[in-house]
Image (cartoon, rainbow, N blue to C red):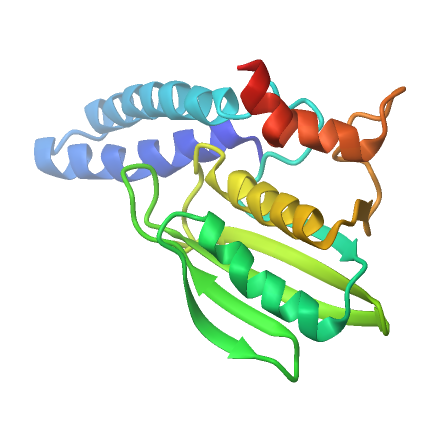
Length: 201
């Protein structure tokens, strides 16, 4: 469902019902709900899309972000790097670490944008010197519809940290979320989210 429509319904229905009950007039309640729904959908939907401007390579603008990468280090080295990578996020702390299953669950702190995010790192050894890692970030509040790009930011930070610290530049998944042109996917990733972007800004 379109984000604007989701926001419209999430605002229009409850506000319309409350207005109808308070004013005891269903018609006014519906009109009030529709008006509030349009305003909220327009403002917050636009803010969400604006957060992704300049990131044309990322086709998925969902609040649930996933990235798969492979790094050329052993499983135990990758596990240590994954724990360290969480330090790049705002007030992130590990809630659960299962070294045998290769799962790290973490949470970020609450800020003015969101109620925080749940970050999950899943590790799978490919061979003795290669480890595949799935990075997931989603809002802690399941009903969240907009995150101003926070979860994409989390995934990008961890991905870039792991690839830089491991000296690896491989993406395990397809490159649909990257702009494929004369530049390599790795260079495009660095331009969009890494030190090059900081230097250009």
